[in-house]
Image (cartoon, rainbow, N blue to C red; front, side, top):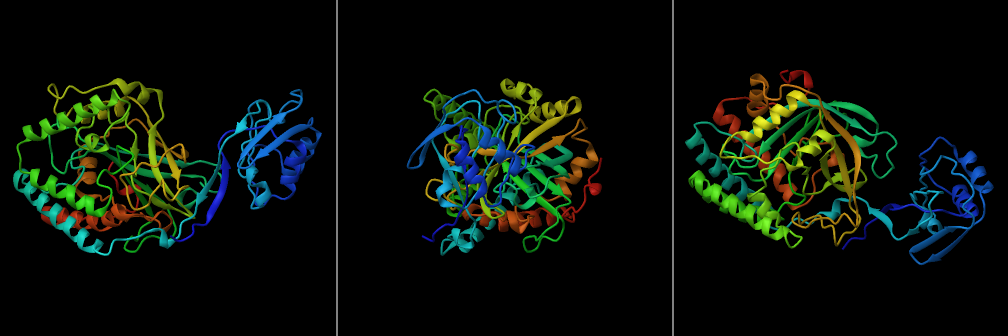
Length: 469
């Protein structure tokens, strides 16, 4: 295995620290990043003026304790600053969050792994597998077209809401997060589509995984081949993993789904219900099945769900999985909401559109950085990346104001014309791993099929001004 180049380390937690040790680290720091209003010289002088501390190092465990808890914090109680340096003897201080008012034991030091082309390991027969996925899903789409007399998306066919708004990149991100699209603070227009999982138009009693696709506009920079406009797409779904894991698993599971496409909707509803009940039983034991959730997602509100990239993407100099999490009290209050599908077979859409009509919708966009090549594999998207190793950290805020999220002209444009693809990406956010390499080709092929059959020209939408109000 190629040796990975580590990036900045970070101590997750906070600690008190000796004046001498901190001052010495400040003198030797390389590219410091501080949260607070004090510059380096002022901070160092105030540190030196602090009472003495004592510190003991136990290998990678750092114990730092204050001798006299009498000095006030220079930034106020609970304030923090960060240090980053390449000096080995100060590795314990790299990106450290320092809290003068409450000394604790620092238990873990994080080092994020850097992106390199050789982190991907394609299987020898991968292209043959991808061709098989395209052929199988095209046949599935033909079956659906025959029944519905219209070609629909092969995944996430039934939209719940089509919104527009803004993505605000956070200011003051640490270097490992200030990457690619997120390198500079600012605000970008966005178009966002929420949808149900199946590649056919089914009643909501067949509640499977959901999708959330985000198109970010006004994004300059080097793009992936074939993407010629200044946009960045993030194609997300419920669940932190993709149960099929690899392109080979995608082909295997897609073949089963394809064979079931022609079955009556009642059979699909029964399968969905069985999977939902399986997870309900597993919850009693503190676990759940990602595959069961894929086929039998709870009847939850689409705006109360979190959505994830499931597989990794390049994150500038690093690698990450991405996720969006609801962040308003109104959305969190929907956590106990459940649809009665026997009352409304389009209830997810009606509930989502009704909420948009009266409320702002806000999600925090988060990145989970790659830190452990063994426990956070690149090639197998079925393995969850433990948050204990690397937590999801906020890099931007997605705001969708109150609006008519299902206006007819807008829905037609979103559903029939606009395309959302992993390949619509900055080179700095190239999709990675087996499933993502398959998606790069599969999304394009199936989109071409759908637009061709419907006689509609597809559009790689270049400006938010092209999206109907």
